[in-house]
Length: 122
Image 1 (tube, rainbow, N blue to C red):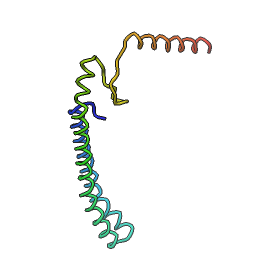
Image 2 (cartoon, one colour):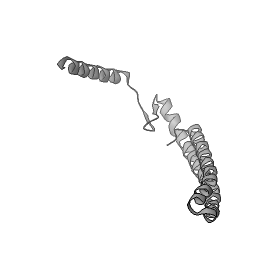
Image 3 (cartoon, rainbow, N blue to C red):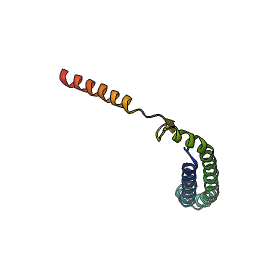
Image 4 (cartoon, rainbow, N blue to C red):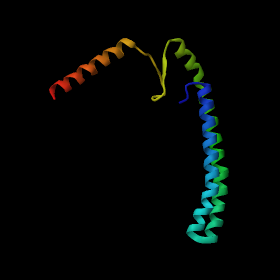
């Protein structure tokens, strides 16, 4: 889930690049693998699948990229509301959250007490 329009654009461009790179790699690899497995006949078959992949994978990258851009733009309103409320974006969970310094400090103290308890019992 892209957090806003810029994140959607970034994600979309990455999808296009990945799709294009995969298509080029397939165009090169498929004929080579085909030739190793079945000689000239395999090369021709591999060339056919390589060309098909070289077209299909970039098209899929563009479709996924467009979808990510649309999702990002759609999420921009939520991003504006969340940031105006002081919320932060969690890159791992891909969601907005409130950050409370006092709660984090309490958690650090609990973990530190646990660690000290474990070290003293050894």
